[in-house]
Amino acid sequence: MSLQSPRYGMTVIMALLLDGGGRVLRASKAARDFFAIDISRLPASLVEVTLESRLFEIVTAREVRAEAHLVHHRRTVQVHLVPGPEAFQTILFLADVTELRRLATVRQEFVANLVHELKTPITSLRLAAESLLGDPMPKDRRRFAERIVREADLMSKIIDNLRQLGDIETGLMALDRPAWPGPPRQRVGPARPHHRDRPREAGPGPRQPARQRGQVLTARHRDRRRSVDRRR
Image (cartoon, rainbow, N blue to C red; front, side, top):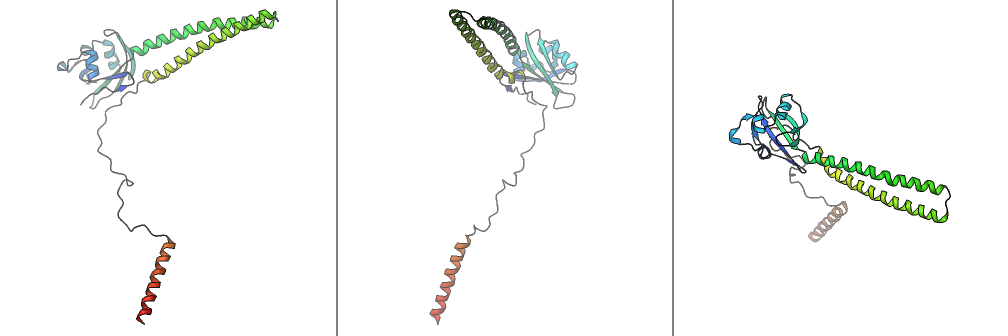
């Protein structure tokens, strides 16, 4: 069995094939590179291969989906367990989501800062509007109106930043939930061609329109009458 490492967006899925005792039998190239696995030492225990006891706890508890912080590698991974190709075997899929979690933290801080920045122009707009309701002098009305315009422009810039953040999140949404590979299946032979794809048997050629058929019959009848007249 060959373990491959599919890629979903920027996230590479690592795979480890385990036996019933939790020993690593095989590892994909991405997993070998990530954990620095020497394939000549396989099979070996999961803790010995990965140096991460948290992964062994997840496999022992049969947690189908989990997220683990790897202490030795200082990375965060999403874990998914599926049945292996043979009895009592398990495939352990791992996706490194460290960068995604860091971006999520940055996003939360960014949104918190924007909320704080929004409070200032909203307060200024309210004060300017209340001042205009008091029927101030013409020169004061112009000053309050200019202040409202400035604060509205500031709010517009903040909203543009929020829209850009939404575009970034749209691109990262698929990465936050990788489409995990399913359990291995047996290879199925090529499907038989559908009856629509079968070549049609040769049949009679296309029929002529009724008008053309009538013209042909009339010409033949006329030729026969001429031949009989000549014999007479």
